[in-house]
Length: 99
Image 1 (cartoon, helix red, strand yellow):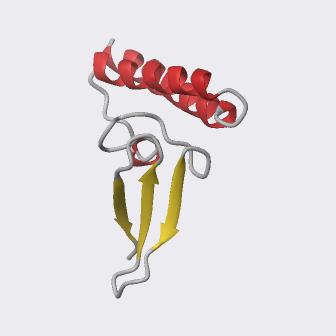
Image 2 (image 1 turned 90 degrees about the horizontal axis):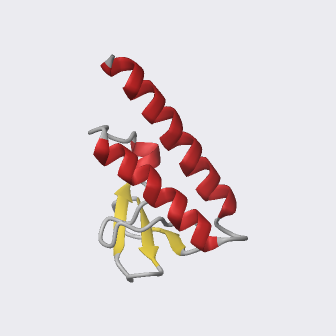
Image 3 (image 1 turned 45 degrees about the vertical axis):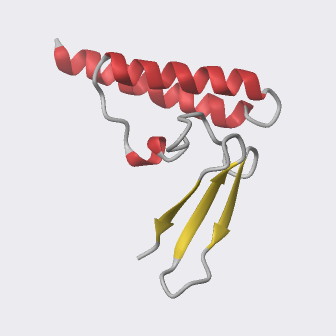
């Protein structure tokens, strides 16, 4: 029974995140709601979201950040190449190192 529940929950999480990304520009409140539902599904069924889905949430305020809409993305200029992502809601900046 567990693999079936896991598969259905992952499909729903993926659908909700995809819809949140597409609705982010025209209806930001709806996209925030869809992303929070996806996050609640993952916590309820104890499912770890894949990295591609986890990266659309702010690490500090846990809100949904759509790249270029309510977040700022910059390439790092130091010796270590990194992408800097700044959340426009809480102001937190974090880096993803490019190898």
